[in-house]
Amino acid sequence: MAKQRKRTSKKTTTKKNTFRLKAGLAQMLKGGVIMDVVTPEQAKIAENAGAVAVMALERVPADIRKTGGVARMSDPQMIKSIMKAVSIPVMAKVRIGHFVEAQILEAIGVDYIDESEVLTPADPVLHVDKNEFMIPYVCGCRNLGEALRRIDEGAAMIRTKGEAGTGNIVEAVRHITTLKTDIENLKKMNEAQLKKAAKEMRVPVALVKEVKKLGRLPVVNFAAGGIATPADAALCMQLGVDGVFVGSGIFKSKNPTKRAKAIVQATTHYNDAEVLAKVSENLGAPMTGIDMDEVNVMMSERGV
Amino acid sequence: MSKVVKPTIGVLALQGDFREHITSLEAAGYPAIPVRTISEAEQTAGLIIPGGESTAIGKLLRSTKLDAWIIKRVKQGYPVYGTCAGCVLLAKTVDSEYSLQLIDITAQRNAFGRQVDSFETPLTFQGNTITGMFIRAPRILKTHDTTETLIAYDKEPVLVRQKTILAGTFHPELSDSIIIHKYFGAMVEQATAKSNS
Image (tube, rainbow over all chains, first blue to last red; front, side, top):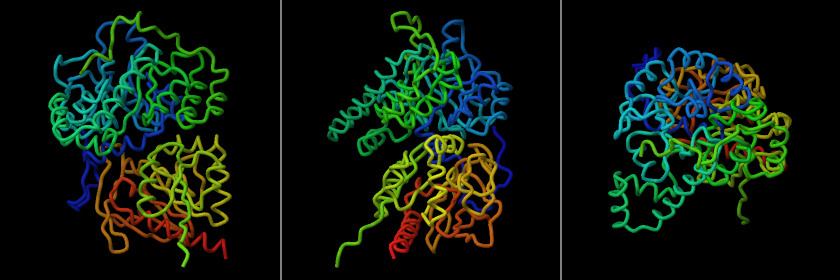
């Protein structure tokens, strides 16, 4: 367990690790770019480019695809060195259902845990019971059912799954659109239909009703997987996500610093085509990318 | 009697939880618009700098040239309110290279620690109890003779004012209360009345 805050207040009314605080940090990341980094040097580049947070991991998804094998939580020492290198929040990944990897990340004190399909799942059925942890979680989804099951388990932030490590935006777009359509359908439902939908999605009816009332998820939703260009980031933003994760797209490109800055600009000015045109100029080659027909492992299908 | 027209208040929308501030301002009765460019800023009578990452917002303030615009206008009496990252960006002395250095306070970023150290606690403002959400919050270490502490927690200032500048380390936009937004709205109305007279 992570160390308790030393300046503990005598006031019993002061609360920590509430869901509001967990979801609140994600609110602060909105309109921003969260970048995958594998070294403290890359983390500094990301911070200097204007990233709102970094995802510390040993191999970016493109390399996980290439080398294959079991992908696990990163070395805690590596994550700690990245936490030391930057002042922005640091996230790190655990395998789906691997609650001990999560306990380790909590002990280090990372700011957010990503229970991620990019790593090899540890539990064939269950996800981590995220409500049990002090550290907030972000989880992936392809549709409303997956999103609400993760939120019910305690996720304080959602990201729509793309196909990580491909540099191909098509799956991210597919799942952003699916989530949107699912919410639109929910908004038209009556009481009986809402109950049926909740049962089908295996989530409490109260959660389904909250989504209907808000017209969106009750937590922040970012896009992730396949974002390689400023235009890709702006596309996801125009489709209605709150921000973007960029994995392999930055450090697998020719000029990571320039591309990182351009993607940050594009995420803020996503509706301004003139800015988008300007920041897209002379970025050098993006990551090569792969078509879905050539993909042998569909990571997004893990952890439903 | 003609209907009183409320001034439009901008919320800096480069990054962060600007949507929540817009919702709070509207609930407090003020028209609110997101601000990403100088031409959008020109349409406003006051500005909120929201919570977010101060490095990310700071960089975008430079690339949009909104940094110079805000400094110039605030020195002419344009009201500004910074929450959390916004407070860091307004502080005169702070461990951030992006500060606009407008209010006479010394602040420290992420001064309570990491996310596990974030907390919520009741605060008292003008006799009302509101929830103070402190998320990877900065601390105000030092104030000046001319800054007024409006809210303190644990004997430390968490909301301070100097002339038309308001700076707070917590997030009223994430709580249900809109009294701080009403207070800032009144500051904007006063400044507008003054510049019109």
